[in-house]
Length: 344
Image 1 (cartoon, rainbow, N blue to C red):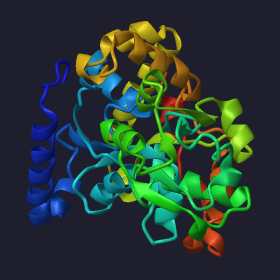
Image 2: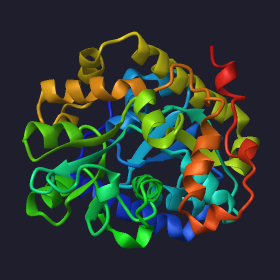
Image 3: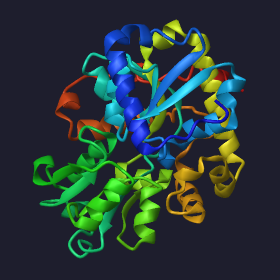
Image 4: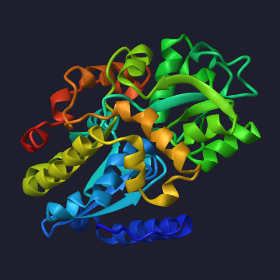
C-alpha cells in the first residue's frame, strides 16, 4: 500500500468496530491468513512516534516491495492491540515487547520477531499546576497519573517507577486517558497531575507550556537510569504458532521493517517527517520533526533484540506484577532473531 487512504478519526473508529464485529464470527480463519500475502497488523497508536517504523515502512513501499499487502489498523493502547492478536483478528501487533512475557504466564505463546526499539520512548510528564509537589517518582503517592490504558505498557512502567521509589501500586491512581488530545485535555482539566506518554504528545505539552518532562526514557541512557538497563519496547510480535507456520511471510515482514530501520538511521528527523502522513503533524511540521528527533535514539538499526534487554523487562515486570512475581518465564520463547539476522 504505497498510498494509504486517509480516513477521519471517526471513520477509523467505525472501521475498527466493523473489523472487530466481523472477526467475531470467524476469528480463526482470519488468524490463519497470510498465505495470500495479505496480513493485518494492529498498532498500539499508529501516529505515535514510538511506532513510527510501521507506517514509515508502508509509506516507503517496502512491504509491497516484498510482495506482501499489509493493512495497518490502530488501537489507542497496546493492551487492546494484544487482545486483537489473541482473539485472532490480526496476524501481528506493533506494540511493546513486555506483553510477550505477560501473555506467556497466562498460557499464550507470543514472540517478538522484529525488535524496533531498545528503550521505551516513554516520558513521565507533570502538569505545571502539580510541578511543585510532583518532582520525582517518590511523589507519586496520592496522585492521579495518566496512562494510555489499564494493563498497557505505560501502566506497567508507571507501577515499576512507583515501586522502585517506595510507593506501592495501591497508593496512587492510574487513569486511562489514551494519548494525543485526550491526554492533553486530561492535563489541562487537572483530572491527572502527570502521566506517561510519548511523542508527539510530549512535544505538544511542552510547546503549549502545559507541563514539563519529569522522567525521560526516550534514549538508552534514560532507560538505564530509570529502569536499570536497556528496555526493549516497540516490536512486531506475533503468535508463535503463526510464525512457525508462516516463516516465508514473517521473513518478508522482517526484511521490510529492517530496511526501514536502516533507512531511518541514515536520514534526518525532517526527512523522516516528510515521508509521514501530513495529519500526523498535529502540532505543526517543525514540532513533529522535533518529536521524531527526540525519539530517534530509542530505535535499533537492525531489529535485533539487545542481549540483556529481556532480563531487564522481566525484572521490571516482576517488581509489581503479581501474575509474574513467582512465575517462571522462558525468555528465549518471547523473541526470535531468526528472521532479522537473515535480513540483509
